[in-house]
Structures are given as structure tokens and as C-alpha cells.
Image: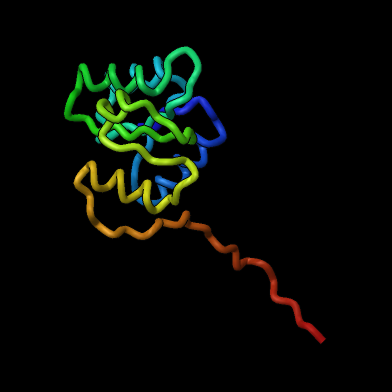
Length: 135
């Protein structure tokens, strides 16, 4: 589950992590994210820290109060995250950090240590074009 108010980023991370074999549910806000977490089976939640209406700390606190064993990763571009947030989430990853670090963090939290390579989308080549002679 990925919760972030920045829609273009949400689409990018969904695409990236699906190439690694994950099924990624997305929500563009805290409340809608909590609704999905309550209604869908999820293995982990990645949540942005800075969001309008309901920030990542409030989302993480709500998740941990109802499902304390569900791993929550705070994904933020902020250089300073309050200490109280560190006590709520299972990990904090910097948006400016590497994708590999984020991937390793998520896999570590869900107990998935398999070194899966990205699954590239399948493209069908169309070989029906007539061959042309080149002089």
C-alpha cells in the first residue's frame, strides 16, 4: 500500500515496484489510504510524511493502533522528522535516497529476501511487415 498526495510520484513508485513483482495499491490521501488498509489485505504501508488534511504521522498512528504488526515505512523528503514519528513507524526512508535502499527496507520488513530482478513488461514484436531490399 502506497499513500502519497503527489499523484505523479505515486504512479512512478507503483510502476517501479510492480516491476519487482509487488502488487501496489495506492491512495492519494491519508483517509482514503486508511480505508484501503481496512478493506484490503496488505503486507506493508509506505506513507508520505507531508500531506494535507492528514499527515503521515497521523496515518501511521492510526494504522498502528488497529494493526500494530503491519509494517509502516515513512517515505519523506524532509530532512527533519520528529522523534515521536520514529517511535510510530518501522522505518524511515528518504525520498532522495536510492530505490535499492527503499526496496531493501520494504523487503526486510515483510520478510522477503528473495533477490528478484525487475520484471520487464512484455512487448510483442510485429514481424508481419514485408521485408524490403536495400540497394
